Length: 244
Image (cartoon, rainbow, N blue to C red):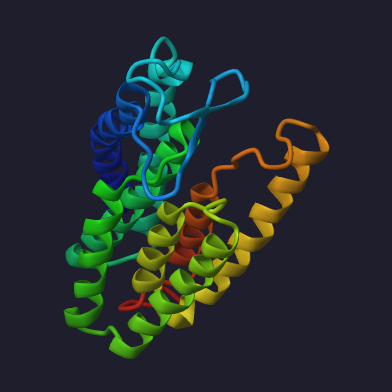
């Protein structure tokens, strides 16, 4: 019964998340604003990178933000309903489900905005980091040191290449990693990191081999961070609750 209830909640939440995703993803195209080292957008057809400092409104929006919006909405709603249903299968207790639904919502939003606009928005990651850290500090069952160590490990691990590569990996990805680390804790974040590294590396290699992306072209990395986090959430648990 919990699975069905969570699936229904996921459908409703999916429409809300889709609206947020659309608004957040449109901002760089409408205002030409770069965020934390994320320097380029691309045409929806895979053309050359466009500087975000271009005149507001000069960037061409992807079809999934305009004429293809219904298809985006279907995917977002279906994905949210599916993830929420799986969470309902693995977690018990209203507050446990509320927290992991919040975690999953953050991951879905950041994945979608990164795919659509190469953007992991501060408006999502900053509150998520603060909220998740507070949850890890005060929710019963969480190990505070484990929470802190998880955030510092994952966030710090991505912060270093972000600095060394001059922003090839955006700071938005770094902030998302801090969020995931605090949410999972050190115990569960390591497998999530391994999944991220393997899936991200494989996808990058395929894109380069097939020439869908060239050297130096941006590749959305939030989907791989989020994918590793979701697998850990569903199979292992969070910093305050183990599903094993």
